[in-house]
Length: 408
Image (tube, rainbow, N blue to C red; front, side, top):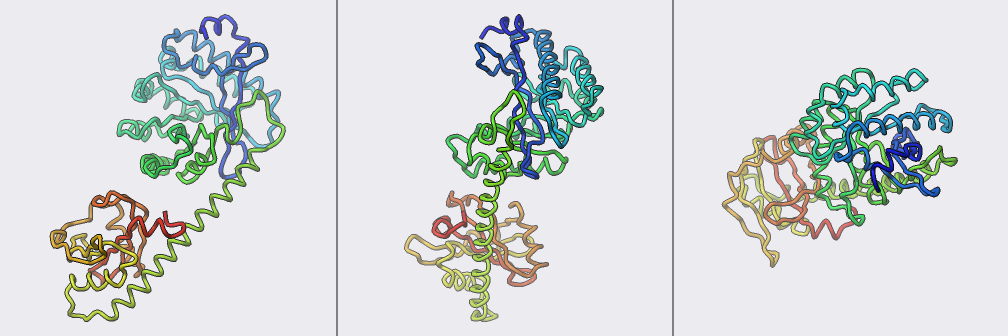
């Protein structure tokens, strides 16, 4: 479509409102304003117009102002909401450079004067090619925030520079697109990718918003990875006016109840396995002589728990391995791997934290799923305090986890 047609016929560009639903209440808490071109009574999304760097910035600013004005007018006259609702507006960082955001702030101030507090306005700051462009307008963004207007940023990746910028700006909302989840797949690596982002959001007090949700699987991913706000056609499509029925609440409540039931089963399965290993290990330890060597202890425990594990070893409180590895070969026979002795594992995430937990709680811990370096497969590790200074680690293979219900 020719951008000039859009500029010459601004009145045919109208706002559509894409609902944003909260996990807290399962209700709409806001709407993202999108631009649609109406031709022969058929709507066409033209949001691309505002991010096309080939279109002169002055034209884009003019169209943004037009869209924001019409959106507020429509919202004020056609949306009847019992609770305060937030409007989300897009604004490209390159447009902020033109006049330091004066046009944007002028329009938002008019909205405030007509009854919409700044706190109910979110500006989604976009960019042309990379998030680094936002460094050029960092002070303008922070000034907008100081007025009480909320800021949202799109997290395109989790590079160090992006995380650094997000931590400096401390946006109210961090948006994550679910578009990377193709064909309803949920590979665990995606959770690992977003772990650093969700951790950062918690530390700086930002809310994670997952958008582009088009399937049950994507909603599940958003829920499991700390998303508080959800948005996408799976829940509700963009609408020109306020929808009559709150269908989003029914759908989201149904799905969340399914997620909760599934996660409860997983937690119960993990606790059951942990308790089984604890009881079995205590029974084995009763029969081991006090003067038994650590390598001898490892082999005795490994053989007794052979149905659960493929590798067993003992470390001290500082993470140094005091025993050899007890490892199972392809025929199911156990042997000692001497070269593993004296290695230090304190660099592993949560290793020292788990050591302290075992000391304080005096019980074993079942780890999260992670990929074993040697076997290149997902496993869990059960660790247990043998004394105040020694701890045994029992690695559980993927095959066992797969054969059991709810352990993956």
